[in-house]
Length: 273
DNA sequence: TTTATAACCTGAACGC
DNA sequence: TGCGTTCAGGTTATAA
Image (tube, rainbow, N blue to C red; front, side, top):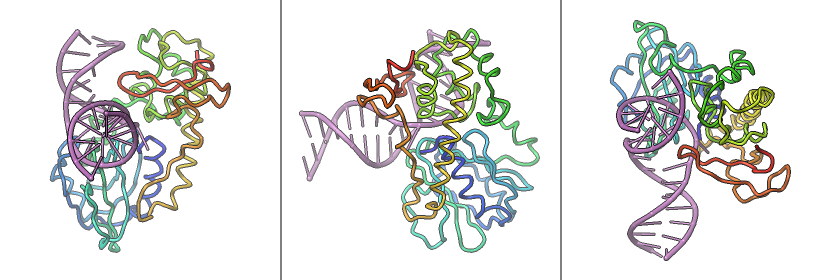
C-alpha cells in the first residue's frame, strides 16, 4: 500500500490527531519488525508531538526530546481509532493519545520499522536511515539537470535508477512504471543511454504522476477513520501497472509484463523505446 | 565504486 | 475442500 502518495496521505491523516497532543502511552505488542523495536521508544511518553513530517517514505513524529521514525514497509498502515476499539491481529505498535484515542501500526509482513532518535544524538536528518537519501521528487532539488547528471554513465536500467533512493526518494514500483510510460522510455533502457530531452520529460513526469496520486490520496482522507481503515487507492488512472495483456490506452498494443530486479514491470512496447 | 542478488515476513490468489 | 506454489506497493546487507 505505501508508496510516497500513501505515506503523504497517511501523514496528513494522522497529523491533526497527533500534533500538540501529549503522548500518554506506548505499547510494543510485537517488537520483531524490520529491526527490533527498542524500549527507548518509550522516551516519547509524556511529551507533546510538535510536528509530523515525511522524508522519503519515513514518517517522523518530532518532539522536544526526540523523534519517532516510522516506516510502513510493504504492508503497513496507520490508523487512528478509539482506545476501546478491538485490536486486530498484526496491530504491532500503539501510541496512546490524549482524548482516549490511539494510533495503531498494523503490518502483517513486518517489513515496516519503528525507531527512536534521541534529541541528544544530533540532527534527525543525520540518522543512518535518512542521511544518504536523495532529493525529494517534488522539491526543487530534483529537476531535469539533476536527473540528467545522475544518469550520466550509468549502466543500470532507468527503472532501477529512479527507484534507487540515492537517486531520488519515493518512486516505488508502481510510479516508476507509470512515469516511464508517460515519458515514452522503455524500463530496461540503460540510464546512461537516454537523450537529455527524454530525461527532462521523465523528471517532469515523475513529479506529475506523484502529484496527481497525492491529490487522489487526499480524496481518501475522509475515509481515514473508517472501520476497515484502508486508504482507497486509485487504479483507474494507472496506464500500465498491473495491466499486462490489456490494450495500451494510447495505441492499443498489449501491455507487456517483465521482471526487472525481481520486481514486476509493465510497459507498452510500441509507446516506449 | 557500481551493480546484482538474497533476505526479511505473512497472506491472498491461483492451480491442481 | 485442501494443499502447494507464486506473488505482493520496500529497503538493506552482502556478494560479485
